[in-house]
Length: 242
Image 1 (cartoon, rainbow, N blue to C red):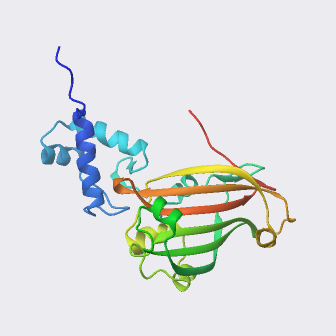
Image 2: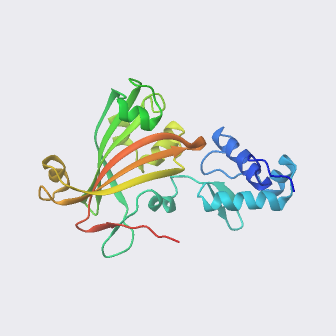
Image 3: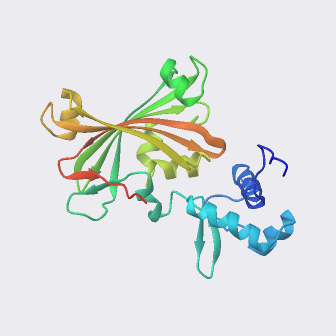
């Protein structure tokens, strides 16, 4: 039997790729319904079952959301159900708390070696740096420092961050057309320095979680580098495996 080509891809994966291209091009915006399986099957010249398999996989990856009796929609960060996907912090007592984002600073800079490497920029390209505090039940729990490509987020300033009612990712999606679809995180333990200890209202030297994240949009393009310090006095980082 002849060897399969190394570029071989099942038909449903090819259809998934075509749907992803349409999403990246903005044909269907976050929160909008996509065409029915029957319409997509006719568009791509494949069976409805092939389209269904592609959509099932995209729904499992939180790219699309099926709604019983209503159809399939593009996932959006404005959906409260998406909140926990990118912030896996819960109270020690259990449950899920909504956070309150307090922007502290927002300034423009030039990408150094680390930022340019992580965000796929040229050395010296414009970037935007945001510092913010996350509160849960009125208590400070997270200090974030967020690095963003300057051209992608042109127009982002402290006033925009303060005026927006919703999550930062929802702001990025609605104002700048950038949807985060996946992220990679690295977590380690650190001791609180004086400045961050004051912000988090914990003693200097207290144990904190350092969470470094790189978030990607369509095409596996990095569009956010985030470094956060998490106080775990009353919260823990929760992840479900399997």
